Length: 88
Image (cartoon, rainbow, N blue to C red; front, side, top):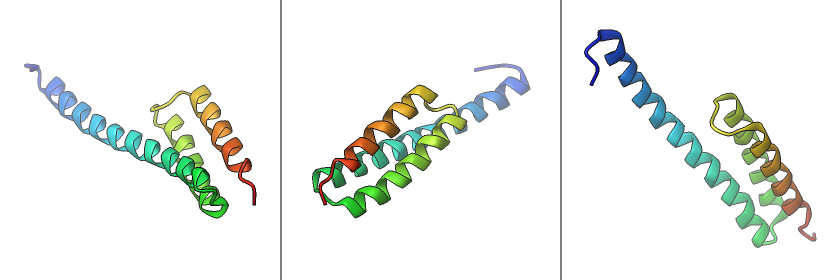
């Protein structure tokens, strides 16, 4: 543990931020899984709704430095392709 007061504060801030990022990562993974489950069930409406939510979370993950832009672009394309492959 740090001896300097500002470093003690910084250590606490880092812990709080880490907990927040873990929550955001978990929410993102869940949103992606929701889209894939809806695609597997051939439910186009649910898949489209889940895709919108996943896209929103993916975009937010770039700004909060959780995921890289190329990863986000790849996932968005992959999920959109899966949703579009559902036969109505």
